[in-house]
Image (cartoon, rainbow, N blue to C red; front, side, top):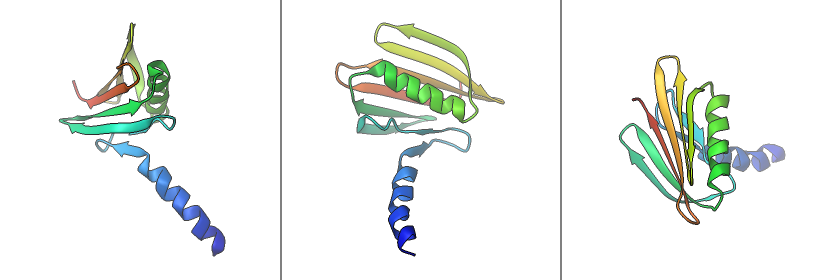
Length: 112
């Protein structure tokens, strides 16, 4: 019984790291960054991290989406910005990560 009490807070904190946007689209928050802003948008979410390595944030979210069964169909990199499009069956999603000088803005949208 004592082990269950020690493990339960860890499970609860792990659940709090997942953000669910719809039945098909969910993602885990980047564990090394501190979330300074989280805003729901129509069909999506914007998360801003206090972190300086935007490419690492993009790679984390990209791998998380692909691990959840999303297939990346398009990928684009520009200076300080990473964009990707994904498909999962008929569902579509876009991921955009921008370097905002010490902060990283992540925008995830479902649909066209």
